Amino acid sequence: MKKILAMMSFMLLVSLTACGNNSDDIKSDISKEADSAVTTNEQMSADNQSEDATEVMQSEVQENEGGPAKVLVAYYSASGNTERIANLVAEASEADTFVITPVEEYTDADLVWRDESSRVNQEHEDENRHVELISTEAGDFDSYEVIFIGYPIWWGDASWVVDDFVKNNDFTGKTVIPFATSSSSPLGESGTKLAAMAGTGEWMEGKRFSSGADESEVKEWVSSLDFFQ
Image 1 (cartoon, rainbow, N blue to C red):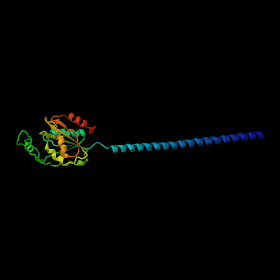
Image 2 (cartoon, one colour):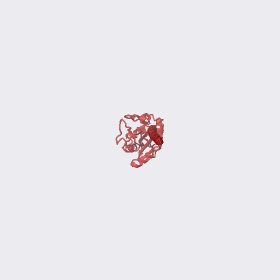
Image 3 (tube, rainbow, N blue to C red):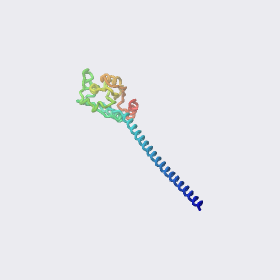
Image 4 (tube, rainbow, N blue to C red):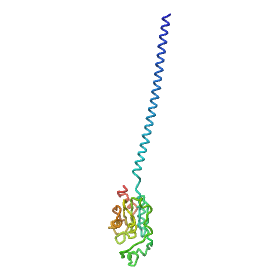
């Protein structure tokens, strides 16, 4: 009988010990799962922080790179040809426009260069000619980085109507691009002379367009400029 009781006691002890070990194993598994969950949450938090930091860095890079240059097309048009080209240039370069307007506008009769008594002929012969403009102030001029200046060719030069606009503005730090219209006359030295008149700015080689130049020609020229590539 004592042996049987001893055996039963031994078996009970083994059983209790086994249960205790199983309990520890379960606790250990729960602890591991909890640790794993904490580690996973920490990793997710770290990943989210990394993604947020990346987005901030990308945003900062975009801000530092800045947007496209602010462009102005300033022009004088006597008969509408330069105006048409100027509007195409503005569309291609996403520019604002400023019309250089004389106080006393030219009539059709004023523009007959074959008539020696016409206004343009009289002004051409006058070395001290001066055309007063309604304004030479093109809005927030200082904010523009690129300035196109358009004009018709008169006697091989830029129409003198644009002179005061060129003289009265400071082109320091700006890229200036002349363009002209004519029936046959080339651009010649008109852009170079305007650059000398201005005395400031980085003047690029200009472009002459015929009176009937089409839209594709104008846009192709604008897109070919280094500044817009």
